[in-house]
Image 1 (cartoon, rainbow, N blue to C red):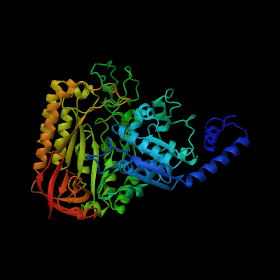
Image 2 (cartoon, rainbow, N blue to C red):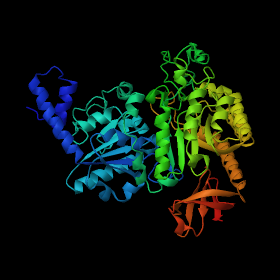
Image 3 (cartoon, rainbow, N blue to C red):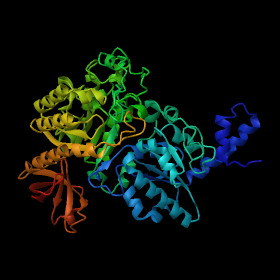
Length: 581
């Protein structure tokens, strides 16, 4: 007879043999309590590989996302000894961080595949050295690539979608330390079921309610394990999911797929919730984005849940806090009208009352109103920005927010599934300028459907925005993601070459904006070493902006104070040089 671990028996009883005799229940319960006792003595290691890319962050070292600490929150019911560590720090000393830890959890994005494999390999090597080949779990947006993740053999389990529902169960039943890889529980992917699972079904199975997420400890205390957390941008979720359930009209090759059924058009007037079955089988949302298919429509957190985290960040000494969402203007908009969480158009308008209540709660803190702590907003959709919501957001001192533009052609915007038009984007920029709200814009080059005309239109819009208050433009190269309309749309060399003039314009604009800073005095946080100059430090602008090289300032590193720096020159389109005053 095949032997099973206590955790495996527990899973079988509660998920498969629910009508088993009483003997089996008590037998499983004994295994459960043994598992809980065992897990409570263990340490869990969470490796934050978000934006790590190929192994070293270049310009996102001040980014602390919510994902890793939500893994911690999900595990804390079973284990109090949890450490979060940045991926690059783990790779420097895997033996040290692996010692005493029983299970490794890695949170990552699609761009981080190489780093994830390196982390998993280093963990396995270290644990083998210590005589214990422990488990590696991987989750986050990178889970879309579950086949590639498991192919190397060092990752044991992939958690698709969200973790707050499945991980507490696995942890309290001891399955995270004694995982039945050959018989994986529902909601998990291993080599045993990788060829038979339906990813979309597992995502839905793992999707928690907002109440379930808010019932977990926020675990913000763990941000102190990031050595420069006090100067970093700490993300707090305001919403999860996305309201754009419009579909792209083209596929990854730029070919027309839309059957003109009229459902996407009905979204603009709120005549449908977005839950319609697309006759082309196209995933909802912008063609390049997997957020709607992975996280669903917008779900908003309670105001108190958000403001408590802001309060915790301030108490811990954090200086820069980001209100994160696919669109903060969607905040509690789903409460105004059924289906509003799945169409990002002016009807209904943003929930101004809820938005104002949120801003009121944030502004209760003197540290924010006095400018000692900075609030950022990431992101907004131009299709929803209106005068009242701009007025409300502008009450936050020195506010900076971002707009997803992607392309400057109305035809291209519609083809890729974006809800905005260029007129909406320009009107949003005018409103932000009017209310003195700083903003930057995101573009994507080499998208399916790009041609010489769309590149020309994008350059025109980019320059227009630069002339109307845009402080920075971020331009990404399109990369196809699974479970999106463009999942097979690898950009050709000709398309990349076609976009070169657009990327060059973005660099020129960013350089120009950096030169406009010369001579100005800005508040900075002396947050990290300059790896190319042992006597210099790198400062983060409190209110947001490029990194600041500070010569002869290494002695002030991590003093957790705000310093005034005069910008004296420009070193590149992402970094300037200054001197402390």
